[in-house]
Every structure is written in structure tokens, then in C-alpha cells.
Image (cartoon, rainbow, N blue to C red; front, side, top):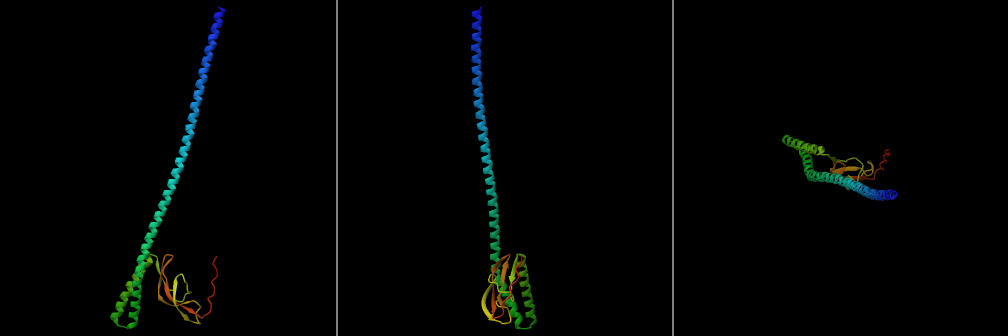
Length: 201
């Protein structure tokens, strides 16, 4: 009976050892699976962060492209408007010469009526251009500005400040901040130097 009892205890111990070994294997297997899952989670997080980064870069690229194409369209529109205005300027010059010439030729009533009509067309055309941001540059009596005026002659004048616009042969035009045609002018010399303007803060 004692031997049977010892044999039973030994069998129970072997059984317990086998169960413990199985449990250890299961535990190790679960630990390995858990480690694999954690690696997969980290990989998924990294992939999600990279995808988000790519998306943000694509969004920024799209915004830059949209802004650039909008700016290019605006520049093309401005260039087309500038070209049209530049092509109209000789017509305005001709109208101004016709008005000036007709006004100097006599006091005929019909001629005056014609000149008044041409003057009205001229004024209307300048009004349309003004709405588009086009302004004439008529600098008679002003200081010569080489960025807006083209000197075509010099006139000696001891009374006027040196480098003053004496006469305007052809008006210039500015569209917005850009000079699209410089004014053709004569410039004085031989007079006193123009006083410098105080600097604005």
C-alpha cells in the first residue's frame, strides 16, 4: 500500500510537472504572440504617421500649386490688359493732337462742335482707362523722374529749378504701380538746384 501510495505521488508529480511544462509553453507562446502584436501595432502606428505626413505634404503641394496657378492667371490677365491699353495709347495721342490742332485753326462753329465731340470721346476713353487703373503721366513743371519720364531735349532756364520738366511732348501712362509708357519731356538746366525733400519716417 505504501508502494502504491508512493507510485501515486510520483505519477501525480509527473502529471503536475507535465502540466506545468504545458503551461510554460502556452505562456511563452502567448508572450511571443503578444510581442508580435505589439510589433504590428508599432508598425501600424509608424505607417499611419508616414501616411499622415505624406498627406500633409500633398495638401501643401496642392495649395502651393493652386496659389501659383491663380497668380499666373492674374499675371496673364494683367499682361493682356496692359497690351490692350498700350495699343490704345497712340489712338489717344492722335485724338489729343487732333483736338489741339483743331482748336488752334479757327473759330468756325461747326469745327468747334466737331472738336467738342472728339473731346467727349477722348474724355470717355480716359474715363474707361481710369476705371481699369490707368492714369496719365503729365509732369509739366514737376521734378524730372527718370523712372517715369524720358528726356528728349534740354532747355536752359535760369528761373526754374534744375532738372524740371519744361514741356511734355507725349504723355506717359501708369497702370497701377507700373509705368507702361514713360512721358517724353524736355528738361531744364542752368537754374538753382531743387531743395531736397525731408525724409518721411
